[in-house]
Image 1 (cartoon, rainbow, N blue to C red):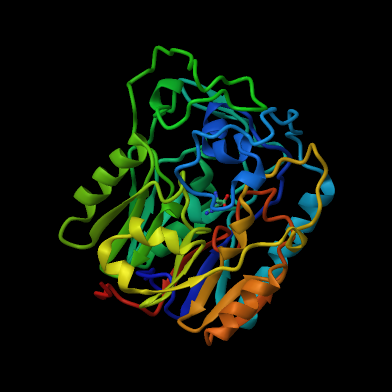
Image 2: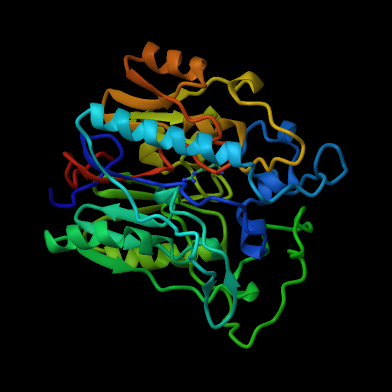
Length: 384
Ligand SMILES: NC(=[NH2+])NCCC[C@H](N)C(=O)O
């Protein structure tokens, strides 16, 4: 079918589901430290909300955490792959056509640019590096060096949509030297990395701050796009989106709802209904959205998650299970590990399809992150 995806909830017909094949380790560099700053520097107990303004705090223990292991235990990767394949089967059972990216081969070398090189991360959290708006594929400027060419693994699928008439745009690619990053929101030395956030290295390719943003910072609401802006990098990228979408989609900025991605803080389940971490988020939403009903997620329980060892790197907040995927205005895929949230959604009249995804806190994303919804029934409608 032709590319058509204007919102987060209308009946889902086609999706691209990520792949963790070849996932071996995290890649510690400045971009990693900044992207996961809250998780690397804050004690989880402090992260009751997981959104600003809390970066000024120091870990409640006062002591930095031990350096985490960057290689990921093979068992976790194997179980993640099992869970992703299980999600593919669930989506197909719901008559959703499931596309997959090309896998990273063991022979794949580092990604190399004039300014730096980094190992290549598998294309797992596809939500992050591509914004699908109606009939347009927009590849966003990445926040993580190791994900710089992640959308290359989607080339077969994107080319097929292009052949069927889709528009296909790549936002300006950042040089991503240390000087490209807005460090103002961060003040402390990142934990567990050789990169000191407070002393970036200079490069002959320094061009100052650059546009960088992930598509997971956006809510797609038909004619309206809501974008979370937490750094100058995000603000520059939002300037580009406003110019590019002018006359077609109205862009609304939210400030510092989180440090970046919002799909474990606020999601649109259907017109007029939001799923949120906390009602406090309301004052950060664009005013038309404040009138929408807010389903406030229950406080996550430690028992919702597998127990990990001290050197296992936790890369998400405990609210990661808000990361549900709507397959229609009244049906959502949710993690079977969060029974309280599933019961709550059912209490609000949703049909909840449970999906097993055990290690969502180790790989930085949940069911919504894993997916790129490319064909839905909805149009460029006015919901605000
Ligand atoms: N598309 C994504 N990868 N979203 C994941 C967001 C996770 C969020 N930073 C948290 O810690 O809860």
